[in-house]
Image (cartoon, rainbow, N blue to C red; front, side, top):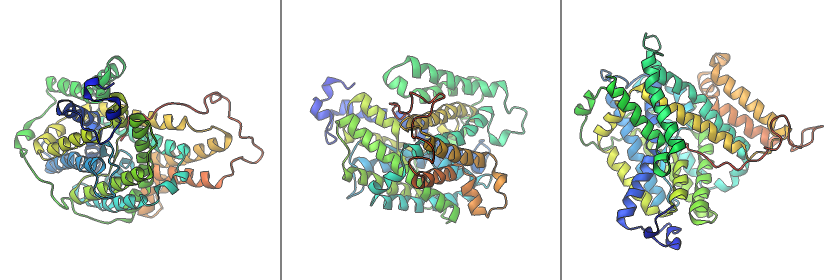
Length: 474
């Protein structure tokens, strides 16, 4: 709950209210702490999938530092689009933007083992996908019918399931280290274990900001343990610059059909997630429904924030759900508080030494955090699915979409004879699952032939609808 000295109840519900600076600054930094780890993790995962950046002797190590920097900088820029607004762009609400997990299963197949040169393909997809996302703002209200909780919950669950393997690999020692004797060692797992145990302890036994920042504090505990065990190399921190500006077209631009289609299709899901976050903020912070103007402006900001990120070497941005929960917890609806947080992110993005410190976190420590975060993504998807009426029709749709989507992701060689572009898209897991669920949901009748729409028993009875809230995910 917010302190009474911050403002009256009416002021706290007003997005245009500015709390006293002594309260506004800590509240703004609180928003950054709540999303910080989730914001920089995708950059590290993409670099690892491409096969560069890890190890202080890697010639491409500075490229990973740069991508981490840009993740912070353009999360701040996109957040300013939302909180301050530029013309029709931005909801002018306390919406925090950050790098999206949703696109990782699309990005990994595009860059897997191809090195830093493959990042240009991602940037082309980010740019075009971002512009497409912005165009969705023109008719976002009219496409929501195609993405009910059955579809969005399935997609979010699939995102988490597709990525849990990454967390296990990192905790064991990192994908590049699979053939080394240390892979899966007790030391590696102990570093990841410290992160998981501290995160769980804070989540369940702490309150307020300590609970909300459990993953960040868990990573700090794991980092401290790794340092004591001699597993942290800070040599690159001293060599990193103290200040650096974003570099236009740092990784170049390359336009691939697979990347463009993948990013554009995932933009639908990201757009609907943002609509949910906007609605959650206005309901939780102001006790009202979001206006069409706010939803449209938020979608524009999502898209243009992503497109600009692609021009400078950053990954797609979206609204962060954990910050929606933070607003409900503090009771402070002020968009200017979020603006302060955005400025803090931008400042961090201009200091390469911060990126160097983040990149010094051992991959095993990061693995512990990733296991928790991606598990939370799965849990968030299941929470969304709790709003589905589980009749036979919906169970058939879910079963087919999940089986084909997850199956193709687990066994990509099943489609070895497909052309390259189609194979990348089909084996991502997310896109086939989403497309199958959307199409079946639109074309199948509400009642399957010879079946009633009564809820299915056998573990589902009495739980056809739920009241869970969306949990942490980017």
